[in-house]
Length: 418
Image (tube, rainbow, N blue to C red; front, side, top):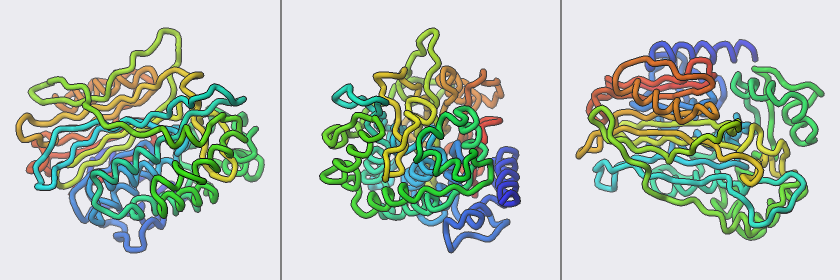
């Protein structure tokens, strides 16, 4: 197990240094995500990039691109996978927002749109440990329904498999160390992260059978698998048992919203950004996580997620495997920071940047985009982190100019190339 993780760490290091190239599909064999995976040492079979704050999620995204998926297919698969492998920041109980730039049915590139699906406040204020209304799955499925080209099952199955057994990555281990044994007060959390009484270390396998069942229900039934009828009622009852104070109507009523991102100009490019959320003085903002994709047609997606608190409420809804996010009534609003630059007129892709790092998330995204457009390497102030996909000659057309990087020390993974 440790040897497998060291191989993944070496892969991540190689990607950070080179941005693309050989050796980057080995992860598919390591994690058994695809029985038809390329052999170690092979280059990606098609052009494309997948970036995520948790490496196993990035590998899933690249696998989807290599097997015919577009940027949305890959991003949705990454999002579901990261809900399994990094529930501290991107679990199904949380929410987020995305920037989406995809071609129309005729193949003509379009301006970016924004999809917002925050972990919102329930109608009532009950519950001993108030939870947010979970919107991650609903947001991802909405994006897939509008822009994806693969079957819904194809983008959920990898996460379902990971729920049957994934590795504790450096990213998740770091978050577990922050919360320490306080998380283990919840029996469900203890059974997942400390089955032998102590927190699992990096490289250990952790299993989430109840979450696998929830993902299966979403795969088979779509949105109805969690947000309608008996499924909504059963989830609300489980959340209430954990002190969440949710109702079935909360799940039925909460829906993702498409909108227009903030627009600006920078270094000769049009820029679309998620709306800024100013940090309030004296408050530490909630943790967040990101993932992004770029496909061969110049389609691109950037998503940022949050549980409104590291590990949300710290409680799982019994029998569902879903870690509940904290109600926004009890926590500050997270900064969901992302920007995408593109060429005026042609709308060709130039760069995508996500920003995380609590109070420095917005700053990280701004500096990351500036670096991508100017070729500079201005440092991002801690704890800010910027992940970047940059194509100086634009895509489509300038694929050979592209590179991708994750923030130093973030424990994420940028993978792709030709």
